[in-house]
Length: 249
Image 1 (cartoon, one colour):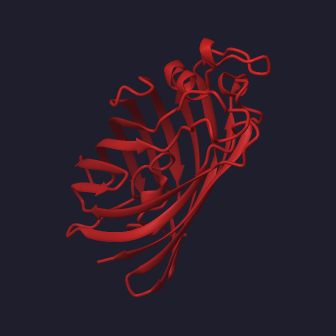
Image 2: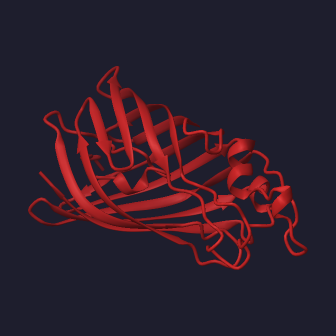
């Protein structure tokens, strides 16, 4: 089967799949609203909902949105580098659940780095990115390798994916560690260790009217022991999901 790829407005996936598969030379603007559910791996919670109004612009050279910005450096038709800055939608405050009461807030960070992309019309997209905190929030980094295979089926674009991600000890400790002043009889101290998260996902874009599209995504993620050993976490598998609508012109 021949692979067809197009701009799919993947603004909602900046913490999971951080850039569109392709862009258009003349540039495309999009306006929309989305919601993303995360943080469901934390104990005694069903997760946190992020509601995200957004504006985005995508072209062959530059992409920017409410959540990220990338400068694209093409080396060939199939291979290019990205210089990227993005908001990491992660974290919580003590109101997340009864178990997080008394914990200092863990904030979202601004991360920046580079990505290498290889796109084959028949084999799909392979992407390797390295991102580091530049906001002095967690002071850590992550390295992610992902594979996507976009399918363009008339009004539908369906993109299954798989990925593996390494997170540094500082990143894990910030979001999953328990500091000495946060210890309770029922919550032990924990210093986070570097960890892996890996999984599979699907992104679906449906063009339901001229210039209007509906976006849906779901990722199932498995955590390694550096995360699951945290007393804040009570599962080794979680589901992230999102839904949005946008207008492109």
